Length: 165
Image 1 (cartoon, rainbow, N blue to C red):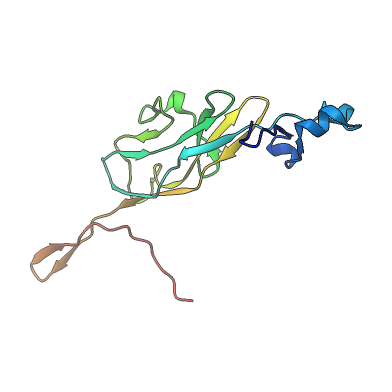
Image 2 (cartoon, rainbow, N blue to C red):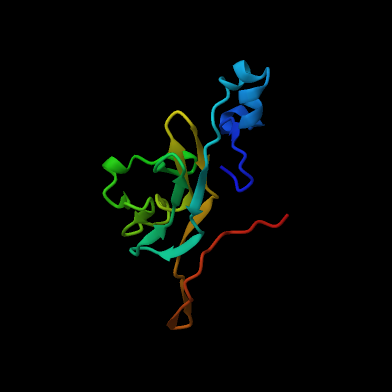
């Protein structure tokens, strides 16, 4: 109920949002149609994941939290647009608050399973789902090069090769 005393009936996100004041539904010819309109449900993110730059062997925490006026949403995680199967992944775990913890980051020249684009999805059964912003996880690499007889270590920074246009 809003502060003006009007209740609104509307559709869920799948129905593209039709909103009708409850009083109109109850007191007009629209009453039969209004019975087919589902009440509006609030579903929103409280916390969304942020980009992260990390080192091999360290941990990354991607935050995600959602709330609804219809109970606690179910949180699931995607990496590169594919849902993660956390039941078989001992290094990745979803915390009670919905956040994703990736432990002992793995990264080698040809094997980069933890780098990628992550999103969390919050859903309510029978209502719908929302997808968070995309968070990019990058693993910084150290570069060592020889200068004469001594080696130098560069600072660890994310490296992405750039091709001239």
